[in-house]
Amino acid sequence: MERLKYLAGYPQHIQARVHELIERDRLGAMLVDKYRQPHAVRSDGQLYAYVQALKDRHLRQSVPLGKVIYDSKLQVMKHALGTHTAISRVQGGRLKASREMRIATVFRDAPADFLKMIVVHELAHLKETEHNKSFYQLCTHMAPDYHQLEFDLRLYLTHLDVERRSRAPRSAVEGDR
Image (cartoon, rainbow, N blue to C red):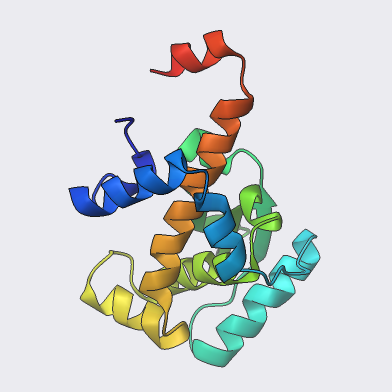
């Protein structure tokens, strides 16, 4: 059985079920049936407005965001789907702090619920830096179905990985193992 890197921490019976869906070529169809709603957030400006609207709704008192962009290098270089950073710069005699959020470009074409899930995740990091109980409570406050969305996003990424490998030349696929 091939290793499912996005589902590595899940129990074997769940991974076996996902392998079965892949073998029967049903994983993609199942996700399409469940997540039909696309989003219209295509540009960095639209992404900033989308994130800011969620932030204003749930985290009004948190620090302001200076920049929100799609980042095409994020998944490959950092093994992450989104990042948040705090940048401090000295300008004259003052220290200027700025917060940035970068979202992997895979979410530009992902279903709307998956974009919301990753944005909620990164917004929660504005208040909680660690992945602890408070962090996940904040995530479920902003998106009550957060845990299901996170699991389904892992299925989606697995599906994209399987599709990519099936389109790759045979020698390239063998080199990944």
